[in-house]
Image 1 (spheres, one colour):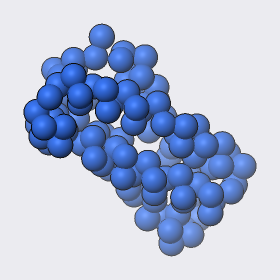
Image 2 (cartoon, helix red, strand yellow; image 1 turned 45 degrees about the vertical axis):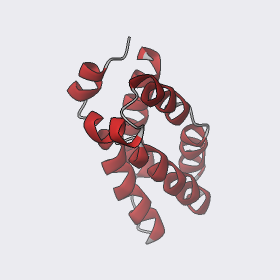
Image 3 (cartoon, one colour; image 1 turned 120 degrees about the vertical axis):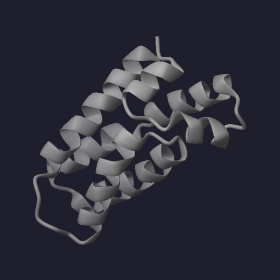
Image 4 (cartoon, one colour; image 1 turned 180 degrees about the vertical axis):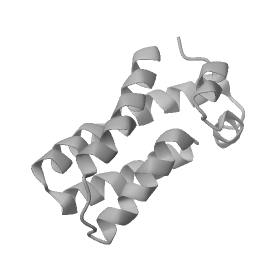
Length: 112
């Protein structure tokens, strides 16, 4: 089961996330569930694997906003870096960059 303490152990800024949810823990966890289960995570992975970088940028940019609002720092930081690289159309192994993001996202979803 996911708890505030568990989120903190992953590096999530729970103080900020809770503040954005008016200090209501149940609401915060509800929003976490919605954000982490966002279909854009899967679409991002699919677009990266297919080399569809323009579409991947759109998904990454949207997810950056979602996870940023939830203060999911350990997902936000690498996702923000990926978003800017995609925006600049830099050559990179985006699938490898996405792997740890997906791994943590999947782990958090499993614990919800």
